Length: 235
Image 1 (tube, rainbow, N blue to C red):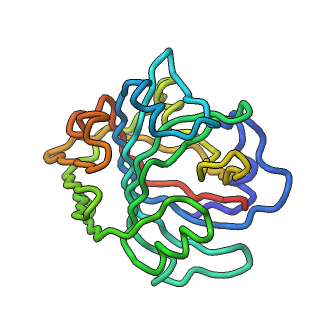
Image 2: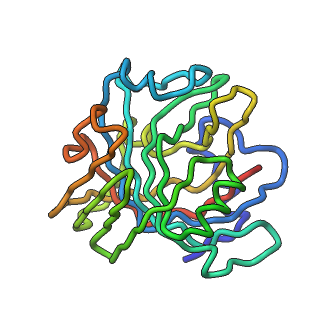
């Protein structure tokens, strides 16, 4: 059920830092999300992340995550969503960074389903959106593109009532860092805590052409499913 905006803004106990003190601009939903988390070598990861961003660590470990979900109802404040532009499937490959003491994520890759929303998302956010053909059902996710290939079949299992500190560190991130220049600021986001479930894969095939030496994407260390979150974003 869709939550009132005030209810989302008032849920701040899970954040590492306060929400911005000016008005949000974007509303969007990240629905039916699959998280696959991988521990990686920090030296290899350092080569892929701009130097002005500090690699974040959990107990000395570096991580990347593949996140597959459906972007839904995307629209600026005081407008309404348009189905063709506002809903599309997305797969991103992200890692964990800090900048000026603010933890967030840096995207190594973002693949999106529809051409026009991909172009608009790239222009509006400055994030590295690229178009790829993506299809999904309630139990599958597939992408066959030049940069990556993904085939997932999964079963949602038990709800995780109390996520571990590591699970929270991997999922509760509220700053999206972009670009290779320090003067390019982050996009701040806010949402209620992710509702996480255990997930079982009956098929898992992931290949990234540019990141093949980073990790074996067929063997995630931690996996989650979530029905999704309602997201507010600031310019």
